Image (tube, rainbow, N blue to C red; front, side, top):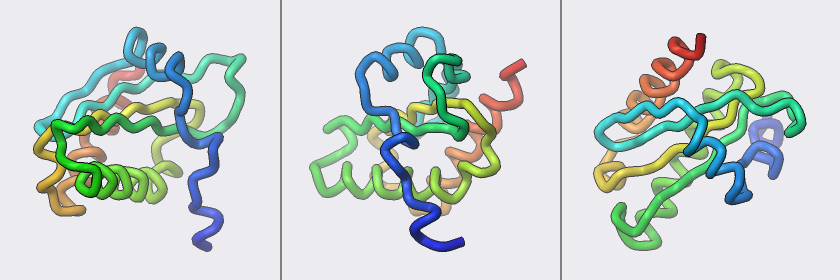
Length: 123
């Protein structure tokens, strides 16, 4: 797959506060030791086909360099797995303090497990 086709466009990201609030209020919550994943089906009027990602990484995780590294790794995980996640689903990934010390493989394993649990119980 070409790098440009894997790039996250602005439509692939949750950016507006109301989008985050919607998932917080109505989304399914799955927790792990280092991440919390909120997921919800997109409402019809929001358009778009693929799944979208929102990130929350607070200063509890670390300084700016550490927080940006965690965000880059989560975005990379999302780019690599969004094709197998499903259509029309929004996700918010909330990093906990332990996320900073994770190796990339451990990060992907935990997020894959949380997303799989959210997907299994969508009903």
